[in-house]
Image 1 (tube, rainbow, N blue to C red):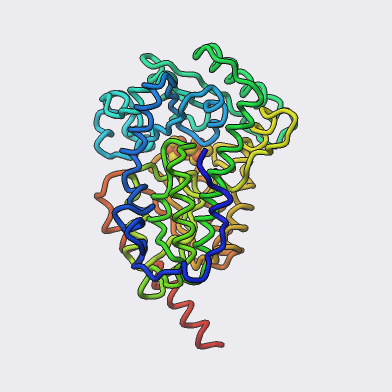
Image 2 (image 1 turned 120 degrees about the vertical axis):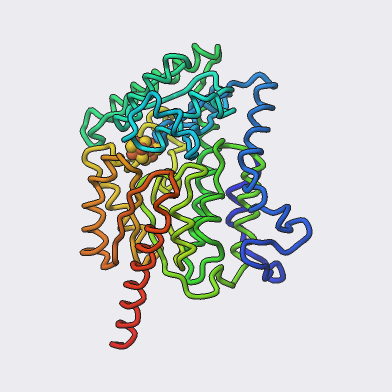
Length: 417
Ligand code: SF4
Ligand code: SF4
């Protein structure tokens, strides 16, 4: 494991501070073409190289498609967990040959990659670990499993019920046994604890980066922050780049925006790699996504796994069952998380992204709107879309209108003070 958590917290010494351009670095070593942004700009290439090398070294590749799947167990089997969620619109027509058109684009894109054999990580995967989250995913997995090795984790649906945790612990023990049998390895408690430490370190580094957006003048954009993420966890070189990015961006005093940007809390569905269009529209229209609550944002990294627990499987179960996803009933924790994030990141508005036909996040949008408008006192915008750029202009207009409302309120408050 690379040096990570300690370095990320290191105070910036006098003289270390620099004034690079937004998102760039100051020294030759950390020049834009070599620095952390450039590193994560080549994230897919980096991960491909890592996975290829891992296979040559005899390690297995395991595809995952949801943040409920504990990567730690896969890592403890000396395998490489790779996120397979599809973000490409190009894969959707192929998927619609088997799947209904009126289905979430994330599911269709992932399945399109499967049909076309176009995701090299999926093609490398020795096993896919799926999970019973939303109906669309569950049923898509059945089709994918016709030709690919798959293991499905059964998620409890009522996470706060007394027996839910017992069931989830059993499911994780079954996954451990499956990985041991499939790969002919023994997953000891010690190996799980080591993987927990690695993942906690990764979460801490990513939290540190995200926390930079709490500043009055955040040193990076929401899009840059989103790009600081890898589809493979636990890569040493990534950890070093996270630590370097924290050091560089902490030392900056200038904001990424020339004009004061509208601070946005973005919530809702995950934005898989390649599906960042709405975030780009928001930031092109004068917004700054200071916090993304979704599974591609801070949701999975808000809490760590207890490294001192007697039973590491229980510790994993406890952390992962607390993930506030809309597939759960009830999902009150999402509202609690949004309250906490709003207090820390001080958004001026809330944007709720819903992928077309994502019923669970769509229904919850009513609760998020209530929370934003009545409790947080911020304007709220629900954006329902898919991966096609055909509605980009319409979304941009709605986002601009939202920002006008925000600026109008700020002006009104300024006058009354
Ligand atoms: S939003 Fe829910 S179903 Fe989707 S990746 Fe996150 S936890 Fe899994
Ligand atoms: S965005 Fe919604 S419909 Fe799509 S996979 Fe996630 S939970 Fe399912």
